[in-house]
Image (cartoon, rainbow, N blue to C red; front, side, top):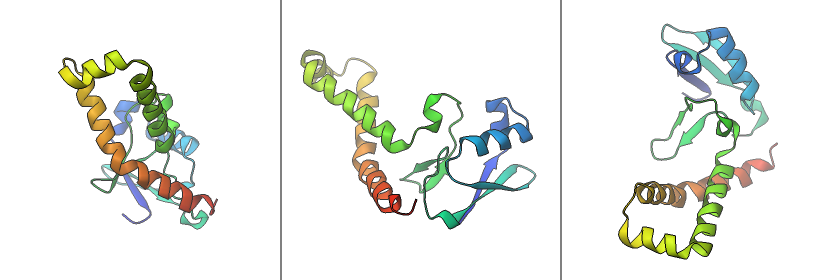
Length: 145
């Protein structure tokens, strides 16, 4: 809601952290300034410092279809990467496969025998819509940093 982000306390179980440790962890990973606002019965509430003008919501991820934010429930290395970088790297790797592994790629497209094809197809559909959004967001907000 506006500049407030409500994170369910259930995420503490996934991260195996106490409330205080999660507050430190979230603040440490965040690119933007988030201020812990309050603890509610079921939520931890952060407020984003909107004075800096940037809209880089790392570690939160934006769902373009639902227009909501989500917090990944893993602490892997992808947790701190900007989504634009993730999309670029995956698209680059797919282009290299399509160019240099043409036999595998044509088999995948023609026969769809394995579970890779639905993942690739879904990712490409998401990238068609979200890619331009992420580039536009980056280019328009980059001057405000």
